[in-house]
Length: 329
Ligand code: NAD
Ligand code: LMR
Image (cartoon, rainbow, N blue to C red; front, side, top):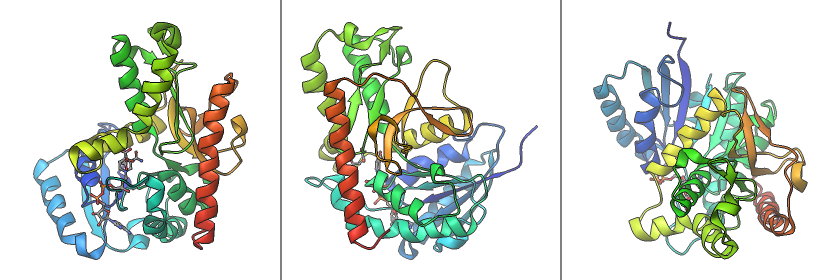
């Protein structure tokens, strides 16, 4: 029997990622084929007409899982009663920029949206921030939602995780389904640390299967960390379908749980694990039981990994201090 509708609000609904995301949500790929979705699209006033066009197309798909579509240009109304909030709406970087360069342009979006979530979201709200710089934008939003448990605010590093899985599968000739226990640590930025130390390929240690430390350090890590820039360079626009796919994966894993014996990566609030200062939103190895994310504990962190994690976390601290100075906290 179908469950009652779940309210999903997507910001930036008329943007590139929005266009790749909405149809997948509406067709049941986010929450499952038995869960009707009440879709709310939030846009800036100038983009409402374009969002209306997308809503017409959603209607034209006649998805049995789509309960309704409503369009808003007011965050308080769009987040009223929301169960799943996908905060995508923000400016993308262009060639030559780092994601952190977007802080002053985008940070201001997340303060009122955090406050609106605080004011009206459902008790079980789950928030995924996609708009860059995603970790720090999630930090801003969470800071303005004091009544919502902080662990409900997450930032997307699943795209980095998926990129890393794909690179490792290609290198080893394995299927993506054979790759497990890979981790993205830190910030969704060029300082992120894609970590193969605990990863396995068909049950064997990935580092042993690869057998080439130079490839790991000089090719794998920079390829994953700079993949966003490489896509911008090639496409002339930032990743959209793969970003939408990662957003679906993130929420799907959160709601349905991660497979036994494996984990994924997500930007979640630190509890101080692995030396990451408490409160920062950093990527960790995580599992979900279908309710909440849990950081995988007890992994050995060697000297190389320690240096990489610390460098990315230092950048998160800098970003936090920068948004503090901008008056966004
Ligand atoms: P886009 O420019 O195509 O779309 C952004 C949309 O957001 C626009 O329609 C704009 O009108 C809307 N918007 C702006 N301010 C808004 C607000 N206050 N409320 C609601 N909507 C608002 O950009 P895109 O390609 O869809 O990318 C969106 C964001 O996602 C960018 O910041 C990009 O860098 C980021 N991104 C993150 C990841 C990740 O892995 N975390 C991956 C890809 C892209
Ligand atoms: C990505 O990783 O593709 C996005 O964060 C877009 C970007 O600016 O790199």
